[in-house]
Length: 224
Image (cartoon, rainbow, N blue to C red; front, side):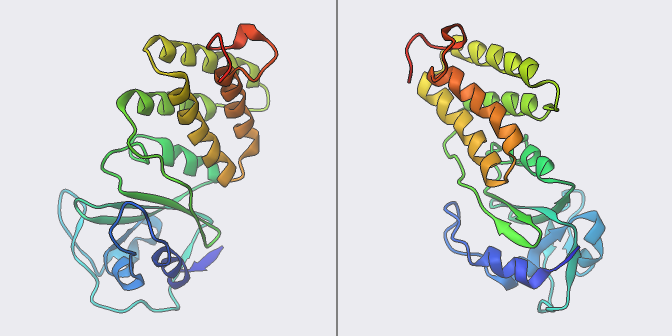
């Protein structure tokens, strides 16, 4: 499917992101946006610094309302210290989550803003701020486990997740911090309607909170 770029940029400009001082404008986004390879022809008007790949001179034109981009799933990321604006096409909602929670996503200290565009509509989620190193490591490790979920390996991955949680408890991570970190992953899956994977995340939350009948699976001796 093809979607109007003007509509997407207007939606992004209407959002007050907590980590920037003011809203983006549609013209600002158009002037500096770096597009993925498939829509790379839109980058021809930019002057791009080599080898960093960051535009150093934006587009001089106004956004034409007829411009469209193809693809149902996009990730918008803004890095404030450069600054740089990226709109990257991905294959699916699963890929969106992997990008959001991966090394260059929301847990990366340099990523100021990150959000998703699904079928031409901007879909936002709450960003967890002030993550410490152990929380970041936990989120990435659990996400790697969840990303492997199929129709036949739920129990196996639940066991792997349980072992990972025990390991982080031994690293002196508190029960509340662990719960909040995993609940953050659950909220993203909920926002993107990936309930089949959210079920695995919620299983891990039960291990942390003690909200499960089998006490042998509790990570802590007392429920949260």
